[in-house]
Length: 227
Image 1: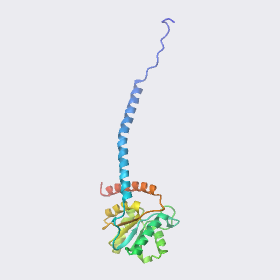
Image 2 (image 1 turned 180 degrees about the vertical axis):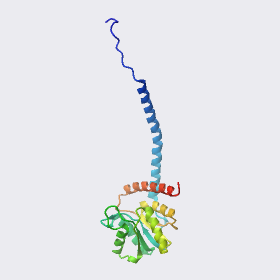
Image 3 (image 1 turned 135 degrees about the vertical axis):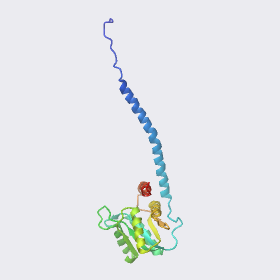
Image 4 (image 1 turned 90 degrees about the vertical axis):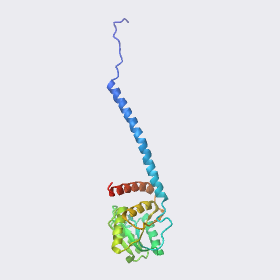
């Protein structure tokens, strides 16, 4: 072939496309550099809270001494208008405190579940304890609350109305640290929390969920303090 043949050339790359590709790669690398420390900080936060949750032994850790006016039983779900297995554990623990003379009254907390229940948590708890011989006059019901914060806030109002000055908060071990922190924020003095272990709950699930709930509470407390 002689030089009269046309030269075949490869199409050149578009400089603007190359530049955009480089910018995207730089942005991705920068995002990773920012995301990795954030992920590490989040993991450290969750592990720290989990350790606090798992190490909690009650308040005081040595156990409740003397006699208090009331045990405040923190609510949990009803199944077919009766306490769920987990809630029965809390109630049985409160019942043991009552029978031992550690508390004079039982204050049952919890409003209406969103699962189709026609009784409030407090009413379902009362019925369970009535069947076990606790007299109605020894129990007080708080039937409006929908969270641990409200359980304790509304219970404190009832205590003030009844002239009660000392309370023992009854809940599960995994829930105790947050409950105690909420009680301290609300002005309970002294803060007393008596906890029970669970044989029926899925503890990996509940402890993981509690990390999230505790984080939410700390954020709520910060906002309540005015940021």
